[in-house]
Image (cartoon, rainbow, N blue to C red; front, side, top):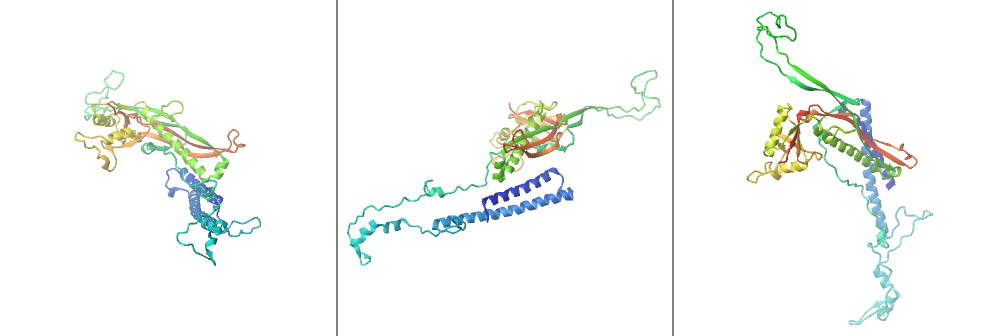
Length: 440
């Protein structure tokens, strides 16, 4: 027979298989499942199949529990013992008839005494206009559902499996920047620092003399008609960025994990979301101190655009800087939702919305570049750039682990749940970004 404990066990088994399948998929990164090894794919499919089976069993179990609960409620109403309602000897109690309030009154001695003068051979006949009055008829207390000391004590709270969280900010930056993998704790890349373009039109040689004046030392001195090609130059630097760890831990008792099957998955998901939230903040505004990343806005060498004349003039000049100084075609604007709202509400001199107003369809753009709302972006500042020039190197994608090997937690039945990721971040071309002042 299905019980609440069996349902909880089914939910725990289903969550286990779902979690294992998720771990296998995450371990493969962005690889297409067709490229997985046969063993990996088989394990993944096995866990997914078992998870689906448990889901069907959970649906059936929930349905059976609802039917059983309804049957017990009905048996209680009509006085019929439920199937599992037996005494210590295994005997079912006899059915007890429920006595209505009307029956209690008509069977009372007071009512019979009242009707006796009008009872003629078993038939009661009361003359028209006769006034009758009985002695008080005692009636047992009325059972109501309003009081916890009466029928209300039998009303069981319907506890659902809904857990409504507070909500989170939408994460956008990881989808904008470049994401790569690394197997090291330190990442290096080469950045060009200068370039001299000396390319020019060169006449064909008309002399076989060496390209230097006789008797002189030092650099080659072009001789007329020698056909010497001009020499350009490039300079580079090596930039290093260290892999950092972003982590968060939560504590939970073993009993709580055992009693609430969904709690483990809930904690895992929330911890992972917290880590991703911190990652987005670091990518944009990390100050580079201690273990903090150096975020895009705090990277040395990014361009700035001061407020000029009006909003549209300022933002258009920023695009020019990105193209002519950064030598990139910007991919997006990043704005705080407050500034994005101001863009949506902008109107021309005839009170018409520039961007179509409430009926506007499709991606919101500014000078042809999409606007992406990011809560960590400071209000009053817009970030324009080619976001492929900001790179995340994943050393270890987000993982969730549990242990009781923390201080004296083993003997206290406490579990530490830890979520962490390891990654490096760097801006490979700072001039590809423009920090724009959006306020007059």
